[in-house]
Length: 394
Image (cartoon, rainbow, N blue to C red; front, side, top):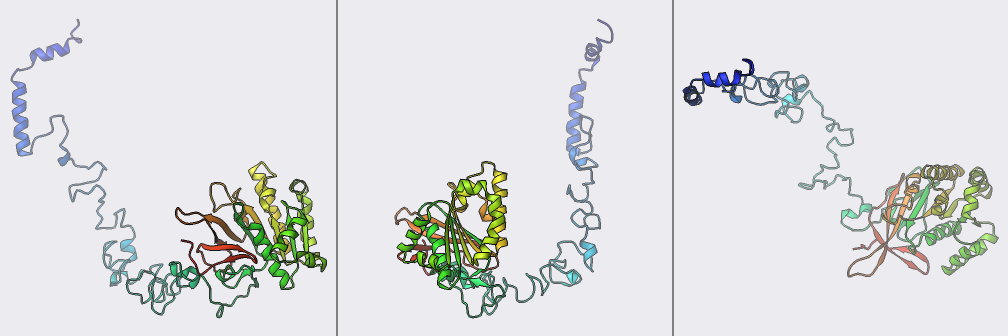
């Protein structure tokens, strides 16, 4: 074994046996006085000149403190620049307070003309502790169309309502009262629900109301024959056959496969046909069958979008029906049509453990219209759908 290889044994043999005890005594004495160095050759953590973040911690011990009382603190970059007195960023005189220090700093919520500012703030008012206001100011949720957030009356007051947008009624008792002023003309609407919720009846009733007011209407069915649609309408006392003879109504049954194959031609010709007929209202029952003709999701969305755009171009108020998703009652079967339309109505079953199964309707959205968002019960009566806007579903 060479001398280089035996350095460890030599070091052990030459080591003073009393060294360990002396070093232990020195370490104990150093720990008691706090003046010795760490036996590992580094200063103790509480005596390090720099903290773990590289800054001097000996002032106040905060690892984030970069002399925050001056201008260099990471959380205080603009506090002194934005206030006239130069106090701390979160001082009571800062931009978050009402003192002199924040007089030169304008909060985006203090603008009297802004949506949140001024003494007429919807969330301020004279309502005491009420976070939504009260007194004489009109709160954001004070409209009766929301039922006072407590399931109250969902009917809107029409006396003071004024709109430059022409509007129409759906013809559904109770449901029209949940929409302030009515549906804007030329809107594209959809209602979806599971089987038996009354989607087709909804569409027929929508057309019948227009026909009674002298409007022209078109009903396109992809599921049933023309004769079946006429018979269904007759069950509710709606004489669609007479309206057809008088030229007010057109009932068209199309095969969904043929429609999908010739959709380009239909999109090109449909707007002109609707204008020639003078149609004011149109119903397509149902758009789900049209969507099912395309396996590719991107292709499906493109074709449905182009079709709905052609209906909008025709300038007719359109009502579409769709199947609901099997997993989500608030979405259509393919989750497309609700994003391409202006108004969405959801029809669904509400089942309770101790109560009987009931039907409920909910307005999911209507562009350019105020509406109630409450879920209201409805029934299929001899005269069609009837919504009980005064009642609660639970």
